Length: 413
Figure 1 (tube, one colour):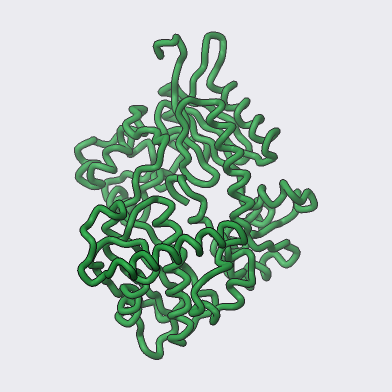
Figure 2: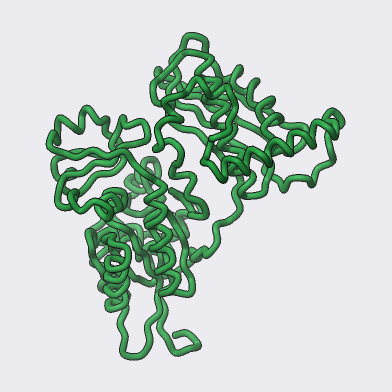
């Protein structure tokens, strides 16, 4: 019981088929129809409606395979700028309803649930669900429990459009007995195999397992999950995202290529996108890492440490070029590229480099300011490096101007 005489618990709100639901908000024609949302290159399904899921279409499935299973489906290229609009609306409503809200992902929120005399957590869950539906038009599911891990398990098990609170030991036991241990976020693959060797295959098995054994098998993070599913809230609700340890930009190249000119154009694009993020978070990169994935399944890495942390285009591109030379495999077909900024530090804290003359530095900073001002007014990438002219289709497609990583301040995807 809180000081104000209100009971408290932890809630989890998760939108149902969010990308599809967001498309239905602005086009009612899509309601009750099999809908698939495609990635920015239009090559695979990144989200699907329950109608399409029922026909066997899976997330990540290539479009040509999805169309065989669901030829009557409606396939739409994603629009993360629109999804963010609705996500921010949900976030505002959640902050009106709770004093502590974690913006976990674009369609998921953890929150402190509070009820007063005569109110119930079940009623609170229903009112939040209905308010989001009424004000945003997006169906959501709400779970409330004694810990955030239990709250998420409840909401996941209550989809779609459910609202449920479980705060008694008997109710928790029934919930955990029916769920495989892999339903817990953070337990999959090797972790699940380690637990299975000890006969731990359900969430209830894990809750009843010896705590010391769980720590030995899953380390301290696994022990934290053990406490959580036993109703002890050891994982905090983070109202602000912790500072980034790394920042990255990249992804699929669309059409696989072995052309070094195109790979360099992608590198420049990722440098410009990475600089946007560095400047937003007011940090500079002390080290760059470039990862290139190839069609054969292998990957290659190039790395470079900067003389001093920087967020300047000329400095970062000079560091990124040798990274690409290291990661480039002549004749091999590349499919993905990821540029990662490490050793982040506030800009301007390091001593100026000896080989960075003041006139060059001032000129580069002036160019960066002009570029930001024009792009902020006219549109992203209106002014960009000429090296990216080899990617006309990418810049001509508005879907490529905004990505999920551009939805800032959330904890994860």
